[in-house]
Amino acid sequence: MTIDDREFLMIPGPVSVDETVLEALARPVRAHYGDGWTQLYKHAVSGMRDVFKTDGEVHLVFGSGMAGVEICIASVLSRGDEVLVATNGLFGDRMAEVATANGLQVDVVRPGLAEAITAAHVRDALATHPEVRAVCVVHHETSVGVINDVEGICGAAREHGALTIVDGISAVGGVPFEMDAWGADLCVTVANKCIGGPIGVAPVAAGPRALEALSDGRPKAAGWYLNLATWRRYAELWSGWHPHPTTMPTNVVEAFDVALTGLLDEGVERRWTRLARARDRVREGLEEMGFGMLSPIATASPVTTAVYGLPGMDVADYMAWLLREHRIRIGGGLGELSGRIFRIGHMGRAAEPDAIDRYLRATADYVDGHGLGRARA
Ligand SMILES: Cc1ncc(COP(=O)(O)O)c(C=O)c1O
Image 1: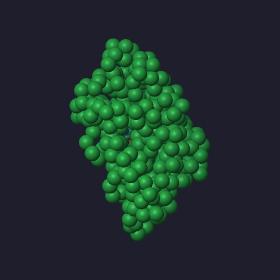
Image 2: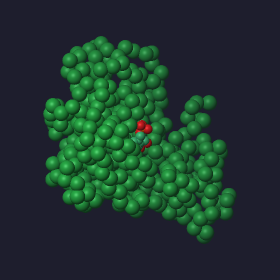
Image 3: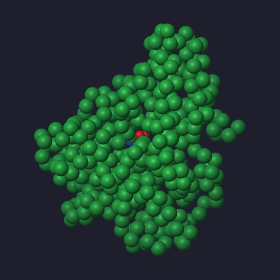
Image 4: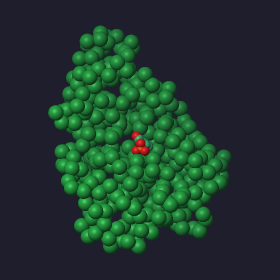
C-alpha cells in the first residue's frame, strides 16, 4: 500500500504530488552548498520569477507559508507603522495578526462573509487612513474559496503611495497573477499548493519599491531569519556557493524544482486554464446533485470550491465517510462556516479529471445512500 492509497488529498493544500516529486524527496541527502546545489537553487529561483511574472528578486524561504508572510511584512515596515489589512477570512485575519505581532498599527477592512475584496473597499479605507504605508491582502482566501481583486487593490494602494503585500500562498501558479504588470510589491507563495510540490519552501518575491523600502535606513520590525535583508545579503555575498543564509532542506528544494519544471513545461497560463476547468467540473457535478456554492462563479477560486451541505446533511459525517470508504480527504468549513460548508481542493493530482470524477461518484453514492437527493435540495 502506498501513502496515496491510504489518503488522496482533495483539501486546499497541501496536495498529493506526482511520483517524480516523491522520487526527488527520496534521493540521498545532498549538501546545501557547492556548484551543483547552487545551480539547482538558482534554477528554481529563476523559474519562480516566471511563475510570479516578475523581474524582481525571489528567495526560497525555508519555512511554511506564514514564514513568508511574516518576512514580507516585517522586512519593509517599522514598529509603529500603519498598515491596512483587507480581509475576508481566516488567512487575511492572520496577516493582521502577523502585523500586530510585529508592532505595527493595524487597520482592517472586512467586507461581508465570502464577499470578494475590491479596489473600492481598499480605496475607501485608505481615504480614512491617510498614514497607511502598506496594504496587505490575500489573493485567494482559501477559507472561503474566494478570489480578491488584487490587481485593482494594487492600483488603489499605488494611488495612495502605499506598498501592496500579497499572500499568494494558495494562488500563485494556479490563479492568474501578474506581479509586475499589476504593481504588487511583495508576494509570497508555497511549493505545496498550486505548484504541486512538497511542503517546506515559501518562495518570496520583491519588486523595486519593496527593495527601496527595505533599505531606506529605517529600522525594520524584522529580526534576522525572517528578514529579507538577510536573505538578500547572502544571495549576493555567497552567490557562488551558498546563496541563502542558512542550511536549506535540499531534498525539498530538489522536489520543488521537479514540480516547478512540470509547471513551466505545461505553461503557467495553461495551468491556470486547466485548474479553472477542474473547478467547473467540480461545481457542475455537485450542482447537478443539488449542492449550492458559497460563491458565484465570478469570484470563485479556480483551485478550491466551497460548497454548502445539502439540507439535512451532516457535513462532518460525509467528510469522515469519504475518508473511510474512499480514502479521499476534503476540507471542512472554518469559524462560523464550520459544519455548514466543505471545501474541495482541485490542484496537484486532485485536478485530474479522473480524480474529480472518482470524488463526484463517491459523493453521489453518499447523497443517494442518505436520501439527500436533488428533490430534497
Ligand atoms: C491563503 C493562505 N495563507 C496562509 C496560509 C498558511 O500557510 P502555512 O500553514 O503554510 O503557514 C494558508 C494555508 O492554507 C493559506 O491558504
